[in-house]
Image 1 (tube, one colour):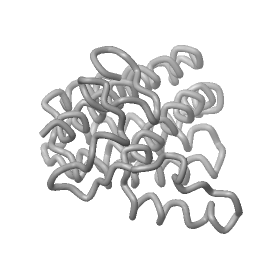
Image 2 (tube, helix red, strand yellow):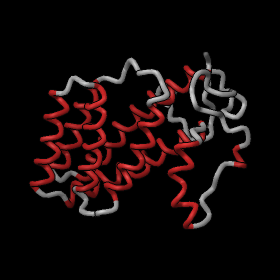
Image 3 (spheres, rainbow, N blue to C red):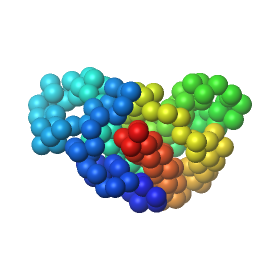
Length: 204
């Protein structure tokens, strides 16, 4: 999202609508802009799917970064919807305990770990054993990306906590549609912040 507008994978990443292919590399980072999107890695076999995580962690192109963020937007609202239907009281307690720890946390790295744990706990509430593993993999990639970008000014602990509490509230009420919408809005904020930081790096 750029100035309130969602930016899908492969679109412009500069204020002047310069394409990712034309923008060059991120100065001072390990990011390299993909010079030919048509040559982008595709997972065409089961073996390539197994190796895709290693490929993405080793090749942090702008297209890959946006793909990771888009994957989260596609998956997590559906997970929140399912969690609101399938959750039990133990799930609610575990998620609430996580939020209590986040509220008391003053260490940024630990807060980030608790943030990932929140999303994994929501996935676990679906009672699908695969989804927490998928979410953990996605956030491992996101954290690798985030470690190469400057800290966002709007990346506020209070905002994250408010969004997480809203998601938990709707899951607790078994309001699946609202839980999905709350998760989507939460992720769009993070998506926007990451894209803005990428634009800042590109324009240096």
